[in-house]
Length: 385
Ligand code: NAD
Image (cartoon, rainbow, N blue to C red; front, side, top):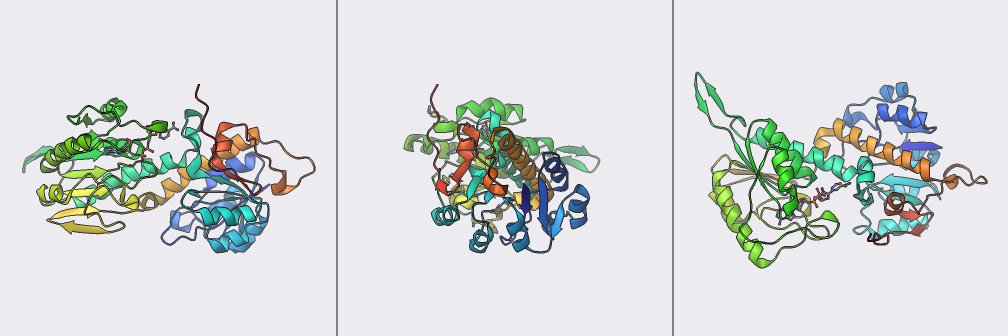
């Protein structure tokens, strides 16, 4: 079977769906790999490195799509790319089926089999293929680097011959994958780190990453379905705003990562709180793509309000392209390993038609959003044991 890796076409996208180390592993699994020329350039990976790893380099996207039984991609395909996908071919990429019904229809019309990296079930067994986590981890790290770059002081406190420098104070809101990565990174740089999350279960994780858990003075647990957060009561939100208003006055840097699946990002940092921050402070809003956790965030932009820099980048993983590509490629490799174990090959079939997904497997079932032209998303709710 041939796995094809085209160059990403989304403007500003620097990542690529496979890297030379992973090419070698896929070849050992029995796949042949075809990579479009220049696919790794923005991640600093040359055609020669892919070639040395055993991949064939093809001169155009059209050649890659037509040769591939399985296409590995990062961003969901655009209209032209859907046109290039072989009838009955297999595609593995982000899809976000709830937000992209037309894309789903077009792929189904192609009788495609589509595995959505955004739909990998978030259970322990599937962690190794969980691209949302691998990329969120990078975003959390990079958020701290961006904050440090915009901040005019050390993170770590120092006593030097030239004087005493206090440590920076960092407040992280939301301690999921990205938030915990931000806490660890800021603590490693020597900052004093505080964090809040509506899910009480994360308090210990915050402490283990080097942060202090800041509690809200109102009794309500934010754990919703599937380990995600829920929308909190009005009373809780009021108490939380009071806590955050106090933190805003005290800290130098706020990193916000709070998300609730299927809802716009909760607005947690008000314009008034921004105004109360010390000049030179920095806010990095990782929820910018979902509208932002700060009222004043401009998604995709860096703005300065009352001397406070507000960073609303929506592309933090792409700013660490090589690492992001390597971890994404490894997620895909782990997924392909599982597919090999669980697929059954139709002896009469050839190429892509020979792949039959084991839809009894919870991870394969959850990730497969279209199975040979049949829309299989959303998957049935997990059985309660
Ligand atoms: P997310 O990106 O959906 O949300 C980020 C964080 O924001 C969450 O911790 C959430 O509780 C918090 N939040 C939401 N509203 C808030 C508010 N108003 N105030 C403060 N904080 C708020 O989360 P995520 O990183 O995708 O992780 C969600 C859960 O899934 C976590 O429990 C995580 O451990 C779990 N998870 C499991 C796996 C796995 O087992 N394979 C993989 C990844 C994540």
